[in-house]
Length: 509
Image 1 (cartoon, rainbow, N blue to C red):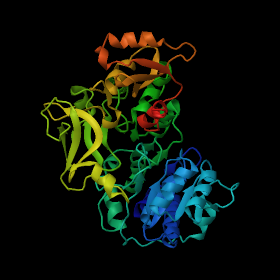
Image 2: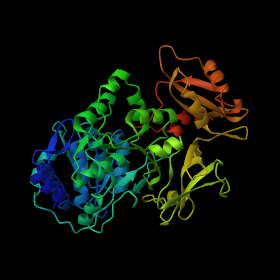
Image 3: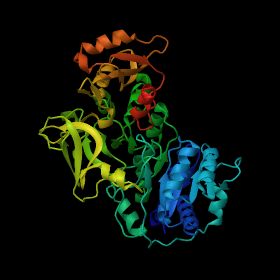
């Protein structure tokens, strides 16, 4: 069945195919695990949606559950392991999940969520202490090791957004992110021809509930060893790159910031010459951070801008970025970028407005069980937005300046928080910052800066911060108030839920 694993088990019996901090699997062991996982799910009642969910931290088993599910004809739902039981239950019910996989860190919440959602089968690894969880080793052992059939259709992941506008929205992994093939066999052959397959060992550094790390883990199909890391630690990541010869990976700007924060002596002691391609996505990367990473790691950085709903809409390599610093790249097939005003009229280059993309396939954004939200994302059929404000330069490179939902309307003037944030982040006393709109009796809204200080014991003065920004921006673009905070709630992809940050200030209005 898993021809790539069987073949490599003969050719490279000593090579580790898949590893995490706890376990290593050879190609033969991987072949057996995938066979049994696929057969176990083929024998299970997965309902009309053929849905399973994986609610677990990074581990060998997490990757096998997803890939075995794909081979076994299931559509797997990657669930953010930070979610509460109530939040997980909503996803399980909305997706019509029939089998839930959990790890030891998520078992308690997973059991409760399954109970609330009516999911009868919960399978877990290293979960012996929890009642209501079927042991992964026992479940694997009970399943057949025979080669499962490969003639059924592959089913894409069902992904759930972070839910910044209410309940999380489900969306199938789009065609641009899901390899071709009418059968699982054809699909695996297509996966093996993917970009990451052209390099060497792949490192899974981000959480496997995100599309980038999850897609990268499938590089196994090309016969490429995969190293799965646990929760992010900067020096551990450098050590793994050196020790395992990691050639490709997917990271986010938050990772870059933490890596650059390491002492220079620590950074310099690791050999990173194996790196050939490092894709990054998630939040916008500050210009100085990306430039520093290119200077350190070389021109191996490749930015992918897009969303779970549509995949990558723009991309840019390191050489291109150095010529167009701050850009997220040019639109890639089948997308075309355009910027429009508030009435939907297309704007010329170098004019800021609402960023939209035309999908040549006509698909655009499609949300699971929610045609109204699908329609709301479109200017017209096939022309959709990811909610960003930006512009195109004369060469067609896209620059993001803010989000629609983040815009602050103060005294009839549109304020874009990113402008102030980009200045504030360079203040020597500020480690991180987010600007939001809060109530102002006279102006309707005013801009407030929420600041995490570099030294919590000696934070910078608010008035001094505002004066510092006013030296670099027009007064009306600057925050009127500053609040020192401990946390901005960035998720693992570096994104901030501005709606959540604003809520406490508007509750009494």
